Length: 142
Image (cartoon, rainbow, N blue to C red):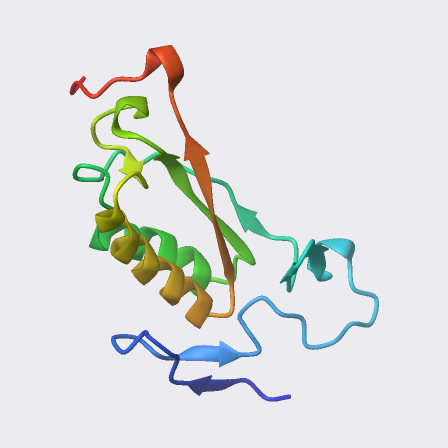
């Protein structure tokens, strides 16, 4: 199948996703395991390349920003089969720092959804590292 670029649902600002997704082998003959699909419960990755979470400390009161969209989106554009969002606090008192991403308020959902939609538009998968810093938590700037 020849690669094509088609508009993607809910990503009007950027549409040239390829079909098949970047990183998908065009043949399965003598394919190393790294390039073979991997099924984890109900999710199938089209290969085994993944980007682990990186703390960027760039959120405003837990809200991810355009910077996160570009940072995470570039991994999807370049073919990572799975991208995992940075440590994301489940409550404000459990942040590693005041600039940590968060999922403790409804207002955090839409910015995360934007990133998720973009990653999915490129045919890739996304996850999140849920975090709570425990007794080392801080909402004070370093």
